[in-house]
Image 1 (spheres, rainbow, N blue to C red):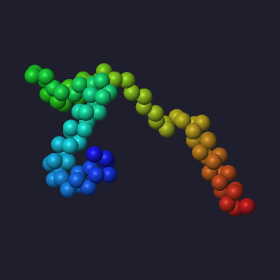
Image 2 (tube, helix red, strand yellow):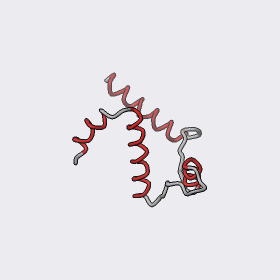
Image 3 (cartoon, rainbow, N blue to C red):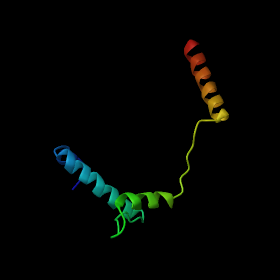
Image 4 (cartoon, rainbow, N blue to C red):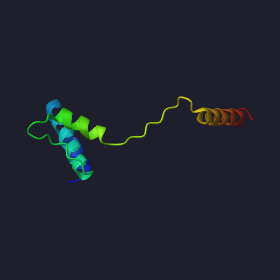
Length: 86
């Protein structure tokens, strides 16, 4: 079944069923990525998710102190302004 056939069916689901579908898709994608988000007997799904997140490495970029990026943006805006005024 293609995504074009699924979207109309999904839009007709109840709110609760849409949330269940999101949960199911999250678990399926996690399995494909090699993560098992299914809780064990003595573990809640929230704790398991937190443990999975803690064991992964993430790179977070912030514009704070990104002076080169600010200068690049400023140069681009100046060039655009000059092009439009010409």
